[in-house]
Image (cartoon, rainbow, N blue to C red; front, top):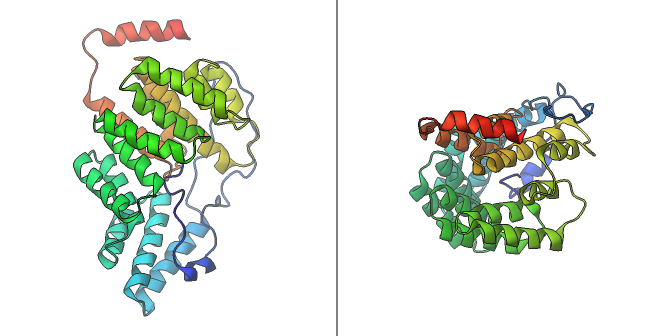
Length: 315
């Protein structure tokens, strides 16, 4: 799921730029969909920096360096360049430009939102809350700021507040399975059986043929991981779509296994979520955070061996 959904492009001059979300010429345009097999992995060609992204960065840099711009225009251009940097994984440069945008335009809600995301990834939760609060003060209906603040509260171990933000995010589009998933993950920390019951109700009410409802069905027990992976590849049109689906799927599989105490499997899935280079998806961002948190919290003595036994039994 792209963290930038719901943010419009803000400067008309940038409409001259080509779309930079396309795959580069070196990527596989029409992957041969692998046949699902038990215990097999589905892989995509990792996304590479596209020609369109490189061109966009060059043009934005030229415009910032050579054009006479108003303060508002400079803020917009810094923001747009930061978004491209973020999309290609150059997050330090992206954060620098988001901060530049805020210096030019202190009421830039979207820039506060991105700064908050970076602060969460650094586990600097208090400053992240402040950034998201600023975004929501400026744009009270900015629902993705509720999602991102909810994620910050989730990882910051403030489950009641996290669930409240996730519910606000969910209610804006209740037919979105990703919103169902994140609301469940937040509510699970408060009351796991009740959270599961509500997720089943939402699934029954809004379920359609979209592939990503299978992520919810995995959690409710209506299908297993092998069936999920078999369904993920159905209808895939190109390598980018496959990479994006796999990033999402492997992240939620990691969360699923981690909740069952299967750390080894969870680690593998989080690493697979990172492997496709879908840098601007929240699943990519927080797969890395999950791995960092797990590295700081080693298993107690004897837990690894017992976990291994349960994992073998589950397979």
